[in-house]
Length: 124
Image 1 (tube, rainbow, N blue to C red):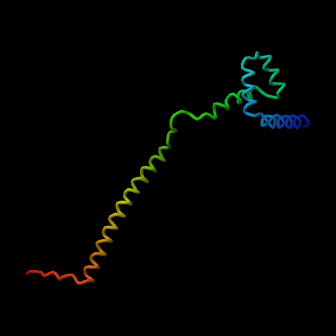
Image 2 (image 1 turned 90 degrees about the vertical axis):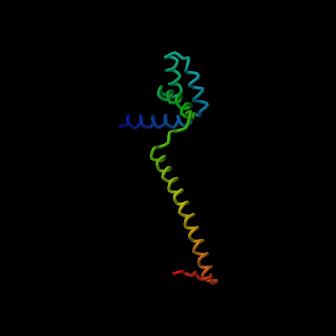
Image 3 (image 1 turned 30 degrees about the horizontal axis):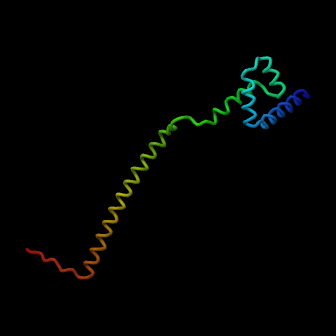
């Protein structure tokens, strides 16, 4: 039990020490270790409390922050929804214009009948 607890606290200490590594420090470690032999690398890792996987993750971090070239692909569902939204908006504008036209006609007809338009004569 004690061994398991001791290794757990050691693991948490390693994790907390990794959080203290600044990006500059990580980059410096990657540059320094690039030309090291395996023995030198092992000594460096032990002296800094690192694993080789930590060093690999240090190498991956700068490239993960760089955005990829080109535009991101849009979700097909999003494209379809945008197209439908555009179509519905166009249809709504058309119906609003038609409604406004008919409203204007109704108002004009009311004014004409209110002010006494000449009566139409029907010829028989």
